[in-house]
Length: 567
Image (cartoon, rainbow, N blue to C red; front, side, top):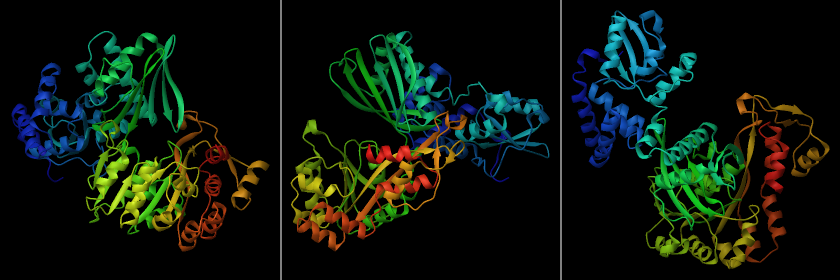
């Protein structure tokens, strides 16, 4: 095995840990200020500084492991190529010892035991391994998340109920900033709710004070689910904790506040958008989880049908004009717009965006956050964009006549404008823009098409049960244009989906590109019914038809589709 560092070559751990910090600074991964803050925590906790940086979110698992590998002179462990291949009992150690030391035994060849170590500079653990096994030890640097996943799979019974340093990261961070008593209790409540939200794939956490208690709810797959009901004594400390980590004003309880913060889970940062609001029983708080790793920003993986994806890709290739995404709040419009932005990665085009708020950050996009309190509105930002030589402009939402006018002007003057707007379906964006004061001749010159979408829950493939569709369901499918016969499915519920019958969500949608006949009809003020006929003649498949097709594929249920399409 190449590039494996031997234990005898590690040297004094303290000196090498200092080299790790120097390496991180030289590579511009962390700065001196972050290290200074981490050193203060390290003194109190007894943890290595680089691991404190990792726990506080200043240093990712990948960067920490790369620094260890560079300083120690070992390779980074790839679990796909080097699986656990040694039974701990065969070399005289226990799985519990390996769990506490965060080690994984890979090979035992000619008196040398090769292991993956989350901390290759942990002399105590590695010396203990040498003493217990009577072998030389060689190490590979392991990402903590990789180690935990592989170790749990290999020794699940040994690790049940036992907390590792990875699992205690958030708890330690809270202990460092929260005092004992009420604030500490609130901090632990926020942490436990957040960890439950991540584990269950929730998008939002709601802290809701009531007359005699406080309710904590999670939004999972678009539905609010009760997480806990606690004493009213926890309400103020929990919201105070949220305000502390989001840098909000603790003393202001009469007005709503908005902010952002970051939690650290498995060595990666998860952004959180925070909103607090006064109620008659105290302040409430909602945390929106913006975990980019759980949302693949790629058109092919959004779950939209091939026809909709094809229209989106064709719209992104247009040299100029305006393409709109519509749907209600929480329908995934922003994710689709961001996926369109991803198509410009590596492109020489200059891409600008104005959003409220900026949810994810992109290296290839110049992003602007609106600030109405300072006078920076969508319209004002758009006007400034026109003087910055852009090729592509993303508008988070067209919500007023001024923004609509500037967006249309930008689309008519050689820019590609991608934007969202609230309308019932893809064709309804046309009268919506006209209601905002856009003249038909302007719309005909700028408009390139639109897409509409909704999110529906995905049936759990483990427990879904096929059945014959009811008469009403068959009529719905027939009206939508689907051929019979096909099966409908019921959501049953099992351990895999926590009894819900659904796991995750998929998008259903519709999209059309505005050809010459549609643009001529818009310019001549033809009624929307005429434009609709032309769009369907051009291949527009309605959202109802798309949803019925997903039912036929066994991906969702009729109830989900009908609720999404007809409300």
